[in-house]
Image 1: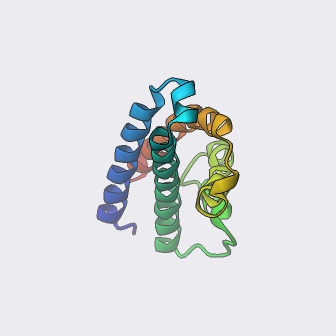
Image 2: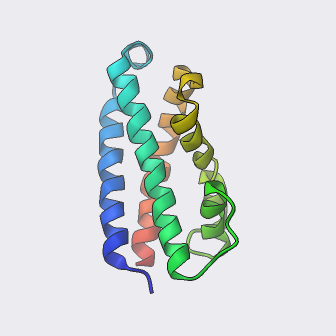
Length: 137
């Protein structure tokens, strides 16, 4: 059985990161691109939000003794295959694992304009993920 307290704690952190990202999302695109404080905060909170999705997923899969996972993208896809998330939703959000890797390892290469667009798309995905996991608990 899944340790609900651990998952709930991580869901609260995810919610906190999403709230901060929503505040930063209100900035005009020009400020987002040119202000290192805005951009840097978005980059960091986006990384933490994605990591939260991965950590929650890893925890659920581990608690159910589900193995055969090769990378972070696999973790999210496996959540859909095992019906912890709708399969199509899991496939839709799985690429965020690649963004996490870019933010962590190749942050110099991230285009600010592209990250601005990604932020617009991922906010709702984080909320939807949280709803599915809360419902599962």
